Amino acid sequence: MALRCSAYIATSLDGFIAREDGNLDWLTGQPASNGGDYGYSAFMAAIDALVMGRKTFEKVLTFGAWPYAGKRAIVLSCTLPIQAIPEALRHSVEVRPGPIDRLVTDLQTTGLSRIYVDGGKTIQGFLAQNLLDDIVITRIPVLLGKGISLFGGEHPDIFLDHQGTQAYDNGLVQSTYRIKRNRA
Image (tube, rainbow, N blue to C red; front, side, top):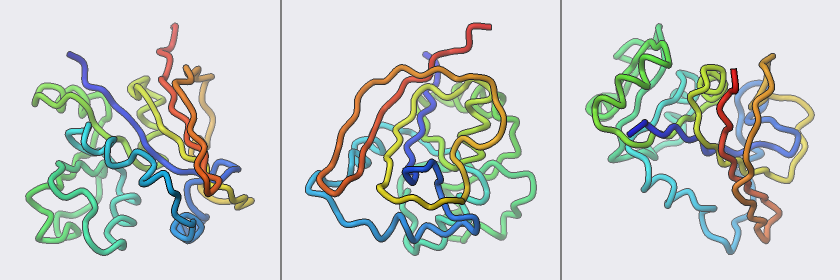
């Protein structure tokens, strides 16, 4: 069985995942919805491990408590020293340099069935190598004007199959897509 690679991410209405400096204040200031946690708990229960880039890892470390307790986490980086990983996380966080295709092959051989791909560059890398299977995008009703784009950069057309959309009472809109494999 193939390893399923899934992303779950929020963007501003104009497609940014963070301000230019990486700040997420626009995201954390949103009012809660009566809809709960937007399916995040169910998503996390269905994944075996996470793969994220170094910048995402460093940002998550600023949140306080590690939000991925009980999950294996892989940080894609060629330069992150082991000392940068807090001692309490060294049993569950590992650093791998890539390449992404080899990482996916290695993870599949360990018996994992589904991974959570997080971080703009990491999601872009999985897409570029035709390795992302599906993505959940929650659009936050704010226009930032500039920032870090989820799908920035040049890439060939990537076609998606819309699986569903949920609108929440606080204005968030969440869409789920399956990535169509390149026809090359």
